[in-house]
Image (tube, rainbow, N blue to C red; front, side):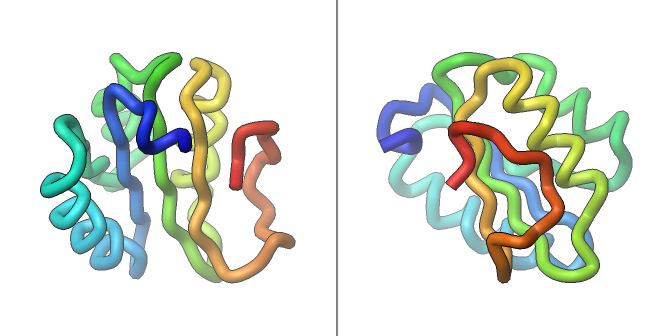
Length: 103
């Protein structure tokens, strides 16, 4: 539901998850009008790319062990701005910050 309602969709994959994020963003662009692949080279770079993120947007973050601290901070930043957050990972025990909108 969050993706269908989203004005903008941000996709983030850090480290080894970047390939999956790139693949996902490619195909999401066929379905959604505004898709942004967030380059997770540094925290500053992530925040610069998400500066306009807010309510009505959604972010999908992909990470597997060793979980990316950059991705965790990006999810927290997005959540704090009212962005719907979606995490793709291997376990519900993932140490990312909990959010009421995280699935």
